[in-house]
Length: 251
Image 1 (cartoon, rainbow, N blue to C red):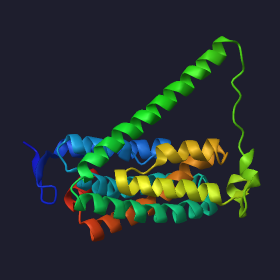
Image 2: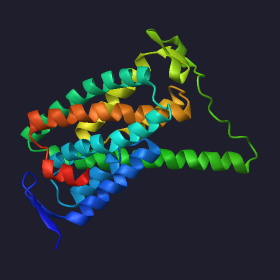
Image 3: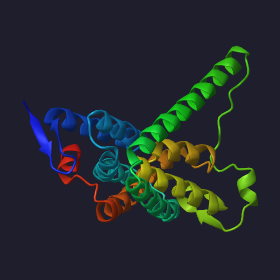
Image 4: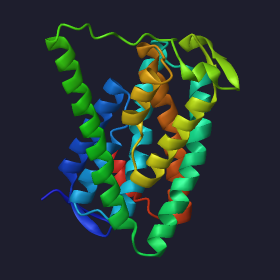
């Protein structure tokens, strides 16, 4: 009951499960500034969706969920357009590299294996780093040491880099190289893993770029819209792995 056949993925899925999954990812996008692809894509693969199709469709779904989140953040004045433009430029470049890499792996028949292994290693590493940071914080608290808060606008090595730009909304005057590099990494992840990259971008914007926390979420979602839209277009035209019906259900 409630089974629906996906023509591109060539598999039947439960309609209610897919709708619920899309709603959950949309909630994450608006609340935390992440696309939710790091949950969506693995779940789709566990549901039997081929990895390449799960990646492409997951990126497309993130476009829809990020729009509503961006509009909400825009009304609050929490979007830095200048920073977003730099992140998007890097993201588009990274997306192109990721799509071409995925196309090559599909050609040699290793796309599914590499995507699955990359997810295991990548998410495992992130989880280990978060656990390590939490343990260190608890140790400092038990030792009676003050856990210093990172203040926005304060940098060290970034100030020595060239190509400095002003970002009035974030109250920053920093090199364009770090945000451009972050954008490239996020674009690569979006194309190769079907994730929005917010779980990488948000910490990077806070701890590396030292952006104000209230601007980070809105700017992150704003960038995700354009990068995942480019990924969707490239996946559909170069790899032919976009399942429109599945994407519609998730959105």
